Length: 255
Ligand SMILES: Nc1ncnc2c1ncn2[C@@H]1O[C@H](COP(=O)(O)OP(=O)(O)O)[C@@H](O)[C@H]1O
Ligand SMILES: [Mg+2]
Image 1: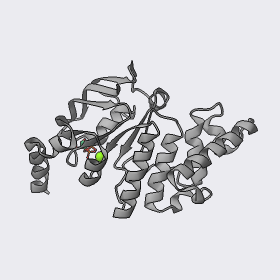
Image 2: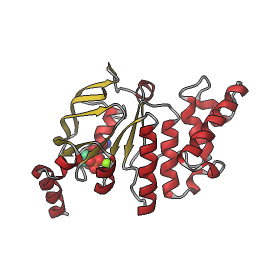
Image 3: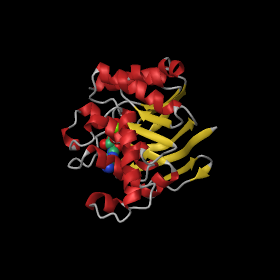
């Protein structure tokens, strides 16, 4: 079954065509990779897909149901949660509070009550804390629950972003370069975590620069270059695709 089916996505920024008729399918229960040279349009694709920027055109279907990516909270409600290439956390809040904010999208109390601690529903609040602690344990940072988020190591901040996204109970977890800035050990641990998330039933779409990580994790890969899809298929077919090799060599040549 196809969980995410996006087609015909175009997006222009002024004179720049960031995406041109881009498309992508993610089978339910899989990990799919979105790769391509710097500036290919990968993050723009995520931004359009998750309602950060309006698309000029495109069809967006999640779990067989068309969704309208016109607002971030609607996309979240539809079942897509994401992380950011440049980590976006509530830096002055604790680790636990960051996950509680994600949790509130699925419960009665709003974001306001989490931040300003004005919740009237103490029973629900206790449940939210318990759920958040469980998620922190799941991603392996429960010991840091009471730390201020900005004081966490880079690798732990990336894990916290994943925990916060998972707190919304998404059908699809979209990760924008989750391994950026990580050392080899952290990358290996991240690989295990993402496999666990997939095995526990959450489908993953990931943008990633580290080719070894992508090849090791993904069952299918889509390659963007200059806003267009130039290849799509198994890791092996993509690795040996002349257009893909050319796209990466072209960038290496210019840099
Ligand atoms: N908000 C924006 N305003 C103007 N140009 C943008 C914006 N976001 C991205 N771009 C441009 O779109 C192109 C694709 O960028 P991006 O999607 O970030 O690529 P990638 O994630 O593949 O490296 C780049 O040329 C970038 O400068
Ligand atoms: Mg990017």
